Structures are given as C-alpha cells and as structure tokens.
Image 1: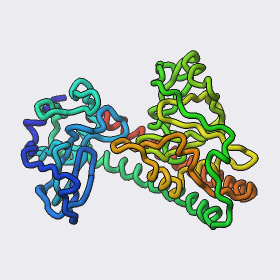
Image 2: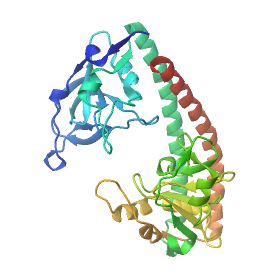
Image 3: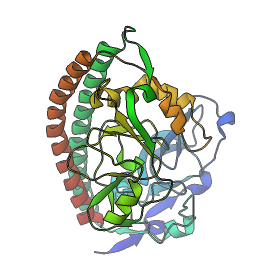
Image 4: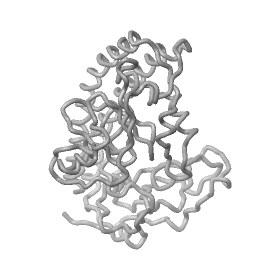
Length: 365
C-alpha cells in the first residue's frame, strides 16, 4: 500500500489559529475548538471550511477509545492546541479524519506531563494513498458502522434515563430522612496511594477511574496484577461483589457495582463503598452516588483547579435520602429488568465496536 505524507496531501493552516483566553472570549454562535473538541462558543470565526483538527498537545494520544482527530464544518474558531488540516484535491475530508482518529503516535509525541505532537512531526505522518472512489467506499462503510454504534449508544442512554427517572420518582420526594454516605456504609476505604505493578496475565483486575463509568465497568481497558500485588493492595479491605467503586478524581462522580466472580483490587484515585445491608442495597447506593444531586455536592467540594478531585472525607459526608428497604428492593427489581435489556443492547454495541476496530485496522492499520 502506497502512503503519503500529510504535508503533501493537506494544506496546513496552523498559522491562522488564534487562542483566546476564557476572560477575553465574547459569547456567540460559533464553536471554539481545542485539542479534543468544542471548548466554548464565541462571537466571531476564523475558519469557514471542511477541515480536520488533529490534537497538537493535550490530546488523547495512545487511547483506543477517544480519537485524536475530528472533523469540523463551517464557521468556527480554533485555538493553538489543534493542528488545522484542509485536504487537497484528491483527498476526501472524512477519509482524512478516519485515517488520523486513532493514529499510533508512539514515538511521535513528547513531553512528560502534557504530550505534544509538533508540527514538524505531524507533517511527516503517513496515511494510505487511495483513489477517490475507494476512499468514498471506505468512508461509507465506516459511517454505516458508526451509525449503528450511535443508535445502540442512544438506546443505552434511554435505558439509563429510565432508571434515573424511576429513582427520582421513588426517592426524591422529600419524605425520606437524609443521611451521609458514611452513615449508610459498613466500610469506606481509599485506594493504596501507589501505582499498581501490572502484568500481562489476566488474573486479578485492578480497577481504575478509566474503567469506572456511570453505572457500569468498562472492561476493554482493564489491567491486571499478580497474586502478590493483589494481596498487598487488599490488605485494608478485600473488595467483594456488591461493593461500590467510586472514582474521586478526573471525571469524578462515576461509580459501579462490583460483580461476582472476580478478585478486584483498587487502582489509583478509586474509593470503595460497602453498603450496610441492614440500611441500603447496592443498587440504591450506586444510583444515589451517581445522582445529579450528589454530583453537585462533589462539584462543590472540588479541591483542584486543573484536575477535578474530591477528598475521601468529603465523599463520606455526601448527603442522600434513605428510603425504606421495601422501596429500595422495588427499585432493585426495576433495575434488574432494565439491565436485561441493556445487556442485549450492549452486546450489539460491542459487536459493532469490534467491527469498527477491525475495519480501521484493515484500512489504516
């Protein structure tokens, strides 16, 4: 397969970028783009075209889930954290975008904390050279798979909203006594403040904030530890099925229930909440800590100016209503029925994701 340098097939419009500090931005209808998407809306624009933006610094370099490039169309403003690429004649803009979305940047980016893809390096990045008809066929095939993924993701979101609406209906009526998280848990522990020593064998999952989503565990990025490392990390408390894991840094506020059949340990910046089953169920505690109200409490206690962070002592003081166990069991049964539907949809989504990754590897790997 012949390949071509980006500098040969694209106009590089980086010199036209203009960063605007938050205090100097005037609100308006035009999207203000950075490394990973829209950051704001402003009153003016500097581009009006079909473009691909490729992260320069602060991008999702190395991620298999979050792209480092995205397509923009029409009037917009771009800051200095994204390279601006306009395809030349013979190169489809969507084909260009797909070729860069999950580009392997190992050895191309530098910087210990905030990795950067310099323009000089970006210019020499290679993408497969194909005629326009073949590009269009590839793009159409990928778009069909992306459309299926989007529909399945929308179905899962609707099911999640159904559970959320039921939670509000049952519990946010002002009738239940208000308790702290500490009062309704039998155990609350923080993770060891060390990075786990990972190994290749798929033995003992070390769950990190990246695996904790809003109500479920993402397994595709899970890393594992040895028996020895596991024993060290569970010395304070062995996680059990039914425990809640809560991410307290980064995209804090995500939580999930640990399933049966695994020997979990905690990665960094993760807390474990064990319900006092005489007071509450796992399902109720989970949906209470991921509720909008608790998220607002977490935001109010955010202790960092850059990376969102909440302290263990603050999590313990989150206030939630504590309804009767009968109502909690009723809610748990409702969740079980909805989750059966979610499992079916998630399976279809996973299959679409596997197909997408396979096609991306075939065309651009």
